[in-house]
Length: 266
Length: 287
Image (tube, rainbow over the protein chains, first blue to last red):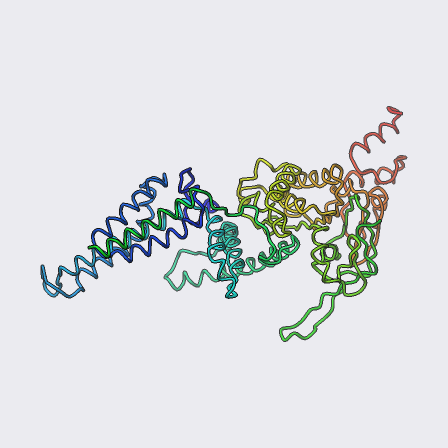
C-alpha cells in the first residue's frame, strides 16, 4: 500500500503539456506567479483566468482531479478571507457588535482568494503534467548558471532524485519497524500527545540508523559505478528544446505582456 | 596474462574510540595471493568474517591495501590516477539490491554508469538495451525498481554494471538477501554472462550450490586463503570444509558417507545427477 505513494501527484496521460519540455513548465509556473502579482485590476485577473483555463484544457487532466488538491488548502483560503474581510479598515458596510465588514476588506479578500487559488491550481498543473524526474532535470538545467557562483546545482538535483527514489523504500521500512515494535507490545496510537511522541522514538532511531547505513551503501555503489560529480558526465535523456517549447515560451511572453498592458491601461 | 593479481595483500581495519585514538587493529585480509585470468568464473567462499568482502572491495579500488598490492588489468589500485580506469574494468555488485539502484526507472539506472563515464547519449541507449536484454530485463525497462522482486532488482544491478563494459564483475554476495527463485535467476544471469559474453566473474558467496559451476574455488578463513582448486577438488575435502564452518552440498555429504560405508564412489560428487550415474554404474546398470 505504502509503495503506491507518488510524490508530486503526477497524472499519467498524454497531452501537449505533458510533452512540453519541463524547463518551459518550470519557468512558465514562475512567470504565471509573477503575472498574478502584477495583475491589479479586473482585466488583469481575467487575463490570468483565461490563461489558467486554457492550460487546464490543454493538460487533459480532469478538473475534478485538480480540485482535489485544492481541498488541502481550502482552510488557508477561508482564514485569509475571514481575516481580510473583518480586519481591513475602510468604508463600513455592515457592523455586528465589534465586527465590521468594510468595502475595502471585501475587495481585498476576493483578490487574495483568487490569487491563492490561481497560484495553487497553476503550480499543480506543473506537478500533474511533469514527472518528479523531469522536474529535477529541469531544476538542474534552469539553475545551471548558478554553478558559476559555486552553488552545487548538480549535487542538489542528484540529492533530490535520490530522495525521491528512497521515499518509498523508507516508508516500507517504517511500516516494517512499526509492525516489529507492535509485535513486542509497543503502541503508537494510544495515550496523549506526549505519550504518542515518546512512542515514536523507538521507531525513529532504528529508521535513522538504517537510513545512514543505506546512504553508506549507496555512496559506495555510486563510486563503484564511476560517479564523481557532475563534471564530464553525459546525459541519457538530455533536455532538448523543440518547436513546441519555443512556442510555449512565446505564449508565456504574450501572457506577461497582456498582464502588463492591463496594468498600464486600466 | 592475468586480469587480476594480488601480491601479499593485507588489510587492517583500525578501530578507534570516540576521540580517534586507536583501540585495536583487526587484520581482515592477511597475505593473500590470488590470480584471476580473463574469462574465468571464480568463486570465493568463506564464513562470516573471513575477509571475503574486504578482498572484493580491493578489486574495485574501494579499499586500498595496507600492505602488498593489487593489480587490475595491469594497473596498480594504489595508484590514485588509475582509480577510475580500474572501476571501469572491474564492476561491482553488492548484497542489498535496494541500496545500489540509483535511478527511479530501470533504464535510467542502467544508464547511470555510462553517464558517469561520459559516453555519448546515443551510445548510452544502445548499451542500456544490450545489457538489459542480456539479463532478460528488457521488458521491464520502464518500470520503477520498487515494483520488482529481489532477483529482478539484482539483475537490473548486473545490467547496470554490464552497460559499463567491464572486463570483470565482482559480485559480493549478490544472492544473500534473495529467495531461492531470485538466487537461481541471478546465478543463471552470471553464468550466461561468463559463457556467452566471456566476462570474468568473481562470485563471493556462502551458498555451496552456487559454487559448483565455477572454474575455480578459493576458500578463505580468517583473512587467509586456505584452499584453492576446482569445485571437485575443494569438495573432496569435506572434513576440512566442516572445520571451516562451511556447508557442503547435501549430495556431496551423502556420497561421502556412502563411500565411508564401503561403496566405491569417486570423490567430490557435486550434483544429484552425478551421484545417480555413479550409483547406477556401481549396480551394473550402466557402463
